[in-house]
Image (tube, rainbow over all chains, first blue to last red; front, side, top):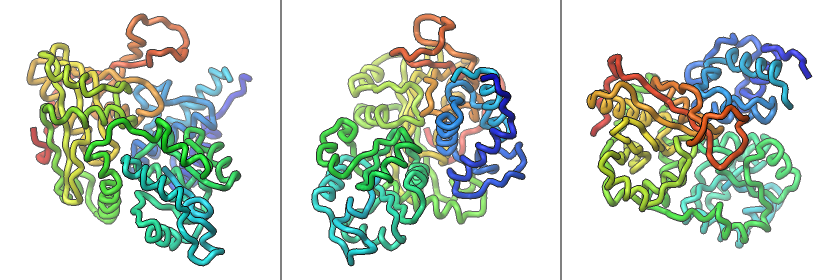
Amino acid sequence: MGDVVTTAQVAGQIREILTELTGRLIPPDLPPDTPLLRDGVGLDSLGATLLLTAVRDRLGVDVADEDLNLDSLASIGTLAAFVADRLTNHQSR
Amino acid sequence: MIWDLDNTLLAGVYLEDSRPPAEQQLTGVLDELSRRGILQAIASKNPPDAADYATDLLRHEFAAVRCDWSAKSAAISSILAELGLGPQEAAFVDDDALERAEVSFTLPDVLVLEPRDMPDAVGWPQFSPPVITAEGRRRGELYRQRRARHEQAKAFGGSTAEFLRYSRTAVRIASAQAGDLARLHELSLRTHQFNSSGVEVTTEGFAALLRAPDQQVITVRLSDKFGDDGMVGGCVLATARWRMPLLMMSCRALGRGVIDALLIWACRKAADAGATQLVVPCVINSRNVPLRIALTSAGFRANGDSGGPADGDSGDSADTATPRTADYARPLDKPLPELPEWVTW
């Protein structure tokens, strides 16, 4: 409880999930401001759903439920920051 | 419905038995489920030629095929991504307990079955869509057109907008007619990723909306040079307050500019009538993330929860019968984008 979860740790886990989802290696040196949708990582909106489902199941943060406007899907960095913040400040489980 | 091959759809093992025959009972199930408009796919740890063998043997065109040595969960995820479906809409059958366990663990929303469940499963509600329209029966064929479209899109050098023009995309927006009601009902049942209310609307329900003076029921049809998808979506517009109580779109239309076109069209209509904003109330769940992405990229923003219908209590979102919803609003005071020329009204 109360452990600080860093954005970098979460970003690593998100890259792993993305590698599985896209079948392409998402390298650690990919800039964190790379967009997740379309021209960045290249997810379409259904891919984004699969990503958020995997994040919920593995990291325990339900982004689809908490981020109404889904602004956290802007990039790997914004999503990692959102999840890390929830894990650090709202560790209810 | 995603099938394993060895000792499941095939009565034997592809690489060990030379040309194993089809498993008769499961082939019957496959045919029956196809007749109901349920898409069929293969996920098998085999060389790619096993897919051709099974397709010829079973005389069945599968909507998607994965014959390789990746984990079954990875094969299933990739099939779902290709078909534009969510794990909640998928079932997987495999004779191997380990494979079933791996899929259950990694994709807990997928319905995982043993071959011996299948004859029974035909009678289960999950496999018994209450209405099957012409569009529904043609699903397999429409997904094959989709594959052809995807391959050309990948090879196409230009932008998405240029590809939509090149493929002679045509979107027709129209007021619903009596003959549209069955398909509208089917869309309200079958759309999940692009459905704002998550509530089934019956044929009678749509008929009543059609008669209501301050409601407009709108249909959207889509075609291009690869094929005619028929009616892919619709919406209900409450014109007194310029709210859209229902917005739904088939995943077939994904990436083809259709939902964006419908939203621009509705915004322009509201603006022409003097409205200052258009509001789309939308349930908040993990399945309609694509719809919410479409709304925000069209300039809609959620202004916090509108809660259930009754109160705005701060209580934790306990699972009650009323799903959580939020109002997504788009102001109409600034100039709106033009409708692409391939959209007709």
